[in-house]
Length: 410
Image (cartoon, rainbow, N blue to C red; front, side, top):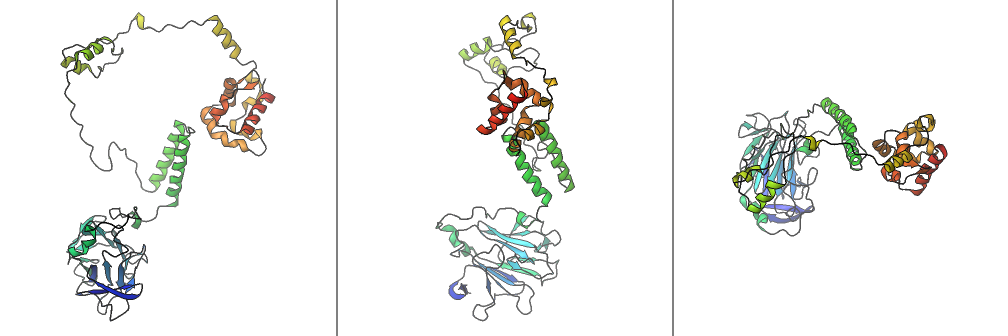
């Protein structure tokens, strides 16, 4: 019952620690000594400790074995072995089968079988498996890649509990491939995403980056969401609110409210004196029930009255003089330079259009060039706070802005 394991093409030591995938009706795998047809590490990504043998006479499926506890795979995540006709499959079949039929994977001490193709049913003990649902296997189980009773497309899996000896030992070194986990979904076997959705993902990252830099308005996000939704509908993706679906799971029931608890006397004295609910709000204060449980009544809410009417604050004569000084000294409507769009204005500032890099942030913060003039230009000088709001950090670029306002504004 021992099988010789070739190491880099040379026959090596014997090992009974094998998971064998044999065509139905084949009692024992082919011998290493009688032929040299075993191929090491088939498929991609290659799995150390795996071998495949062409179909023997009278059978139409290849043999496959995997050595558990191999010196090169014992410290890596358990294997994920694909079965199909694609060149990347570890158990490659002929063209009568789809590119991805099913896959074998190990989680803990259990081997699992998962059907991948909706076009081809995989039958375990005569029952068709649901696509994407992992089913635990027992040693000696047979699964069929064709509807029963066609037994020529059936496999029998063999393994023993002794194969898990390496799981009880301490790992020699940490896992070098943390992303290769056996519990991951079958997304690698899914069809590639269309180029439009890849471009949409890149555009979403750009919008998120610009929003972190305060360059995006709410209206921009609203337009972009409609743009994303149109692309989703073209590919059959429907957007549903998280509050209704929650990844298809029912919403958790609201936990019962805690009963009101009595408060210390000194806290009750503070709460009954100062805080009062604002007028026009029907909801009581959060601590009102605790006050009643303590034997105290909460203060009555405020009411509208003459004392709450907001009177206009009188403007001092000095403040009126300051406001008059801050008003623009020229009629901005008569200055044609201030009527330019911001993009055209930035292009005119220099011949190489280097200042166009500030367009998005300026447009996000200001409505027009007239607003920039009214807020930041005074007494023939551009206020330095404009550069902070526009994101202008280079001294040379700042000098270009200052020169333009001196030459075109009074």
